[in-house]
Amino acid sequence: MDPKKIEAVQNWPRPTSTTEIQSFLSLGGYYRWFVEGFSSISTPLTKLTQKGALFKWSDECETRFQKLKTVFITAPVLVLPIGLGSYTVYCDALHIGLGEVLVQDGRVIAYLFQ
Image (cartoon, rainbow, N blue to C red):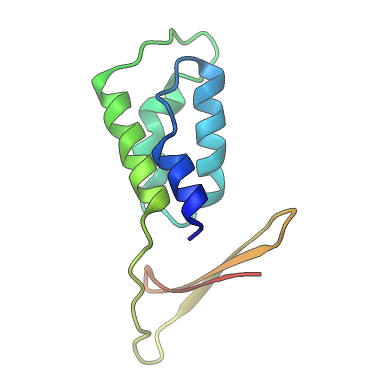
């Protein structure tokens, strides 16, 4: 993990508008595959971006915002594969490369970024 990127996320200021929330969640859009329960965690923030929604930052929004910042900068703990269980590979192509995750029975085995 790049220390400059970690610092940027740690110092990300609390959003004060819908546009700022969308910017933060777009960062999370890439990581959503790597964060268990991403959509559940981000729900209060996502609701603030809905058309016609009144922007009111609550304690719940602050808690979820801080939780997402933490999971974005924390390296996950990987596990060893077990026997001949079934595997799933998730892939995501970006302008700068390709990201892949190897999962066995809901547990992340490996990440690969090219």
